[in-house]
Image (cartoon, rainbow, N blue to C red):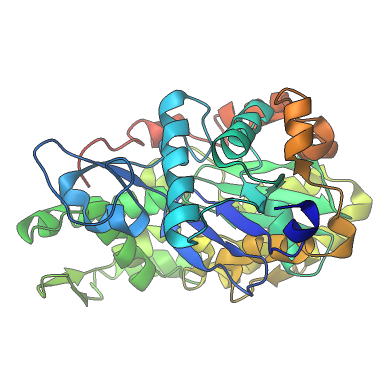
Length: 417
């Protein structure tokens, strides 16, 4: 296939989220597929009839066959970041094979790949991803962007403060006129994983009595269906002090019913009161305000009026109104919260939009350039133009006030959940 023929093909957009991978063609309005970011290898002496790649299963195929598989969660296991360690690179080779060959049904990967990953991914890790895609899959061109900037661009804006609450943590990223203000980035150590894990532990006995094979996934479903954040912490305390249980029912896959109680308020309240789970951290509204206050005075008003939500946790009922109320109370002035209906895949939409714009030509890392430079990616193609270098990423990653170590001691769940 020559270059003129290649140009008519749509780009493939891949958003590497910790919990889910969203992917599809730039010619589509929304991701074609959203799959769990998990890989399963068949246990010894087990057999499963579903089509597999090198004895591995991915996505929902791995989820539905989990009793017979040893599961790995490539990004959850690495606290939301891609790892260049061999075993995780092999997991992603398996995932990319599944994405290209089985889901998108592409035999020859003569496409441009637009890859969305964490703002905390290092240059070395990006080079490892580039090596995998160029050398194993023979792609044409590659481009990296952080989820935060793509979330902003999905709104049509060039300035805003992104609050992206993902599976492992919540990142707070101020962006002004398209540039990340790296010195004002903050990280809140509570994400979907902590909430799901607590729901899973709450109902573990019920799950075991009813032979639920993937307890984490079931805890996630209960969290998504019932979680609610009350308008204020006083409302939460009043609710808990009444000693009244607001019972709800959840139907398990086998048809049995379990009762759901006030934990649907208690567990998500942790976002605004981390002490509930004995987490030593400021709450999310205060960390958002801290980020704004670190920015230049001339940018603060615009950032405060354009707080853009992204990530699955922001769908919790009451999340956006509570965040708005608490930030307003701290700042003593109104703030603007933008919570688009499709915000769970807004980064994908932003990437699709800009990758097909006329201004984007020339920003790809080409296969020819990659091999001519021996696999070294020039900084111009990466996030470093924003000033967020690897030293800054490392500082944010190990800062105990933003990322409480006690939360992650049992992060990697080796049991079969």
